[in-house]
Image (cartoon, rainbow, N blue to C red; front, side, top):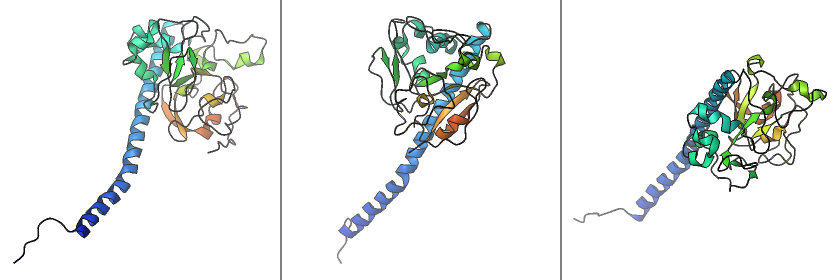
Length: 259
């Protein structure tokens, strides 16, 4: 009586085909789980930043810091002590494994190369070192709604109609105004008249302080936003135009962001 040892070629091919089929089914699901995990971590980080900003305003007469300008610290420098790392304000790179990780979304997988002013993308951090603030450059991937910054380098004169769009006190700001969000630069002044990007979600296409700085495909066709009342929400790119970004903002619901 002959005994069989091992598998036949047909049996091996069947096993390989079953394994390949299982991988084809499981890998996309695992990828979606991984993306969702990064999105949840991003939400948690935005909440930390938002609570830190609330603590900052409670220490500074209820106001968000003004936009800096050359040789002045920016929002990420100034809220770092309220997140728990005083090193960041003076030397951001010394805190890269600490507080700076809170400023960088886990979906961002590329680092800025350290140029003094380098805008980011959906997958690359921005770099900021304007006028030599501190001993090293900062990196990040979140953007502040600068209509909440009542004074500073970019503040317009009171005679300018846009002056009335700024919120002068954090405590007087309506709770559904966005504070921070996934973005490709440190700050932005979104307007309802900003057009959607024509062919890319990775940059602001040369438009200064526009909605394009938030309109990036970081979490597929959505970004995370934090609000003045500290809640976090995932917002589809088209819905960015329906948020209340500044005083007198008129939401738009007709915007179509191209694929």
